Image (cartoon, rainbow, N blue to C red; front, side, top):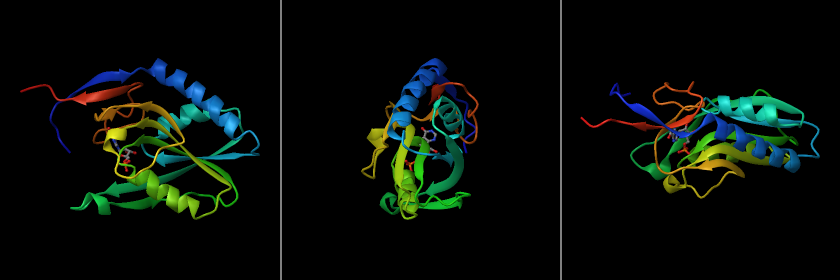
Length: 180
Ligand code: IMP
C-alpha cells in the first residue's frame, strides 16, 4: 500500500455517529421485539467499533458472532469473488440474525454474505450498514438500515482503515492527498 502522506478531514463526528446509533437501535429493538435472542454478526474487521457501540444500545438479548470475508477483483469487476476467511462459530438455522457491515460500496461483499447465511435458513435475516456509497454500487442491494449515505470518497476511522491504519479514529474522516 502507499506510503504517500495524506490527511484525514472529519466528515461525520463521533457525536453524530452516537446519536444515529441510538435511533437505529430503537428501530432494531422494534423489528426484533419478539425474538428470544438476536444473533448480531459483525463482518470483520471494519465493523468492530460499530458493532460494539450498536449492541450496547440495544435492549434486546443478543449473542455476538463474527464473519470475515475478503473480496478481491480480477480483470473483470463483474466476476468479483468473495472468500470467507473466518466463518461463524454457531449455527444460525431458525435464528434471528442481524448482519453488521461497515460500508456498502460495490455491494459484492454483502451480497455474497447474505447468500451464504441465507442458505443456512435463519428465521429472519436483516442487515445494517454504518455507511452506504450508492454511487459505487454494482450489485442491486441496500442494507435494511443505513447509518449515513456518503459520496464516493475514501473514508477511514471508527473501525474503518486505509492500509490497516486509522481504525482507531473516533470519527469518520475523508482521506485527502495534499497537492505536490
Ligand atoms: P463492497 O464489496 O465493494 O461493498 O466492499 C465493502 C468493503 O470494502 C467494506 O466492508 C470495506 O471494508 C471496504 N471499503 C469500501 N469503501 C471503503 C472506504 O472508503 N474506506 C475503507 N474501506 C472501504
